Every structure is written in structure tokens, then in C-alpha cells.
Image 1 (cartoon, rainbow over the protein chains, first blue to last red):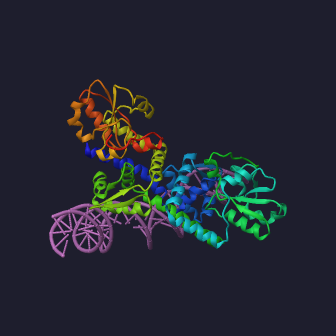
Image 2 (image 1 turned 120 degrees about the vertical axis):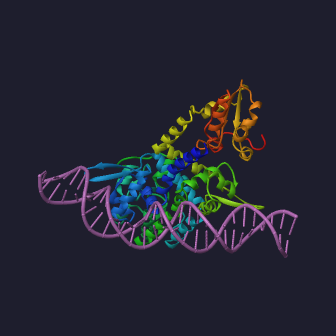
Image 3 (image 1 turned 180 degrees about the vertical axis):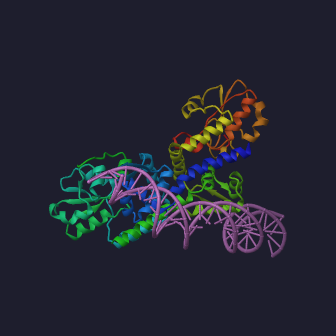
Length: 224
Length: 224
DNA sequence: TGACTATTCAACTAATCAGTTGAATAGTAA
DNA sequence: TTACTATTCAACTGATTAGTTGAATAGTCA
């Protein structure tokens, strides 16, 4: 009986550790974070996470073995995605645990954002309250595909690398609130920095769509 | 800017991967599961997880570095424990994700419980409904310390290795519901098997106190 | 203080994993 | 079919991790 129950436990915990192993690499977490914005090809994932394609593919295989991502073929490309919302929610839970318990995380954030003179981001509550206001415009500065896959209602899509060219369409009388993928994506930081240099009144909302959705708030889909 | 934002991301995800690394070993998950029942000494943890003391201590160091456990000294012993409920909840979330997504888990469970002729456990809802009934007695078959640290209200403490000697105190007219640490602890399985062999009407509730608590149900503390 | 014990550390071996490179595969388009 | 391309596989190196053993440490108790 003892021998058998030891075997049972060893087998069971070994299964759960597959998920732990998949989460044990920084790059795989970055891939999960990217995929929580929507599906992507290996190529795009590799570029965004600064990986070679072969290496990225291998990491994706590992994630797939732990059932944290799944793949779908379309023409020449293989698209990877999160199989359901539970995985995205779990990644959020891991992140939150790290933010609470690992003091180093706060240090890194502070260090980086001080370096770039970044002001305190606005809270979710404040964003919700101000969304309807005439003198406020919300910018989604992620690539267009991600905006299309889901965005804050009434937000306007202005990908960060096109912001420069679209400055003329923005009014200096409005207050601009920019958001991107989440607290560890720097698109909104860059956007706000640029806008301020040009004399706009701009602030940053630091959460992304996954957090917005997890809080039960409505998400708009499509061209907006 | 690119160089810096890559460095930032690498640092941030590396921090989160510390948690992943800590979760990447079956034995460490087993230790977390044990600790979610309450604090314990290194010696006890080592015995329960079938580890050498030195090896167990090392695993605990690793968990401590990821801030998933903390230590407290009392007399000759060092007690390890989960620093707060968030860690226990996170372990539950990981487990649930595994149960849903890793098909192998179900297979292992089925395999083992078929082998032991185990019937379907009763649901949480049924347990709640029947707790007050005169003809039902709920047994907590974990070691006494764990019962003392928190148990289902009105449950009686009968550690599984003392069950044999206490059979005379149980009535064959009552229905017995036994529970232990959770679905991967086999105390309740053993208890129910013994009771049935002796002609008692016994069933198993397969969740433990962490799940009970996470569902917002009341927990009784002390000698009961 | 000194004897004692639980716990941790240090050093080592075997095993596992990350990342690189180049070749193979599987699917598309002509 | 053939040419083409995105993706994956296979083999390798260097780095990291698990687990073992024996010694050191830190605290208790008389």
C-alpha cells in the first residue's frame, strides 16, 4: 500500500510539474504574455521576443506539451494561441503573485521608469470614469491586429510606430490616455514620451486588455 | 531604446520565471501541497514526501528564494509555512489548470482508484447539505495537528492510523463521510476501504480544507 | 559551560535544459 | 509535378539542476 501510494503521488505531482517546467523560462513567459494579446505566427513571436525562429519554435513545443498553447495551420503559417481563457488568467495570477511577493520586480520597474521620467500611470477606475468625457481621447498604441482582436471601447487605434505621422490629427486641447499590452510592454511609455515632447497632455494606463477583460469590463472587437 | 527595453523585459520575465522554476519539480509541488495544510518542520516534510532531510531542506531553500514559503524557528525545530493565502490559492489554481488540461491526470486517478475499488466521492454540495443530519458523521482522518489547525465544522478527528482502534466507537447505523488533505492524499481512501470491510456505510469527500476555505466556507479551529 | 540534535552547507556526479546551426519536412503556388 | 518557403527536427555545446554524502553550524537544555 505504501509503495503504491508513493508511486501514485510521484506520478501525479510529476504531471503538475510539467506546467511548472513550462513556466520556468523567462522567454516562455514572454511568449505566453504575447499570446495573451491574441494568436501569432512563430515568426512574429520570434521577432517580438528576440529569439531565433528555431529556438522560438522549440519553446513553443515545450509550452504545447504542457498544454499551455495550441497551434493552428493556415496556409504557409502556423498560428499559436492560448487554448482558453483559463491559461491567460493563470498567467495573470502568476504575474500578480510575482508582483506581490518578489520585491525585485518593483525595483526593476521603478528603476526603468525613473530613467525615462515616466509619471504615475492612471488607475483603471479613473480611466473608466473618464472614457466618456469629450476632452479625453483614449489611444490603443498596439499593432492594428491586436486592436482588432479586442480593445477598450471608444479607444482609437494608433500603433506606436505610426504615432509620429498622425500627430497632426490629435488636438492639444484634449487629454490623451495611451495604453498597450500591459505593464511590461513599453509601447505606451514610448507614446506618452513622444506626445509630451510635442506638447500634448498625455498619460498612460498601464494595464492591457487581458486585465481589463479579467475585471469583467466590456471589450470592443473589430475595426472600432 | 530598443536595447534598453529588451534588457527591461529580460529582467522582468526572469523574475517571474523564479516562481516557475520553483514549481518545476514534483517534490516541491508535493511540499507546497503539504504546507497548504499548515506549517511543518523539515523533518516531517521530509518523511511525508519521502525525501532525505538534506534534500528536503534544499528544496525548501529553493521555494524560499522564490518567496513561496517562509521559515520560523521554535526551539530545536524550524517550521516552514506558506507566507499567505495567495500562495495556497495559486497552488490550487495550478492544480486546477492541470486537472483540466492534462488528460494524463485523469488517467492516473482513474487507474489508481479503480485498482482500489473506490466509489465516486461525494460532492461538496452534498456534504454541506448532510452535515447537520443526525445519521451522518463526518470524519477528519488527518493527523491531529492538521485537524486542530482547521477542519470542517462538526467533523470528528480520527487519524487514519488510529481508526482501527476506534471502530468500536462508531455506529453502524450512521453514514460515515471521511475526508483528508485533498484529492491526492490517500488517507480518506484508506479509511473508507477499512470501514467498508468492517461493514460500515462509508463514503469519501475528496477535497481538503484549502479548497473548502477557498470556496468561502466556514472552518472550525482548535480541538473541535 | 559543554553535550546534544535539528538543520543547513559544501562538494560532487549524473541528468536535464537552453540555445545554436544546418538539414529535413510539410505545405503552397505555379 | 517542381520550386519555394515557413516551420520543425536533430545533433551538439555549455550551463544549470537534482540528489547524495559527510561535515559544519546554530540553537537548546542540563
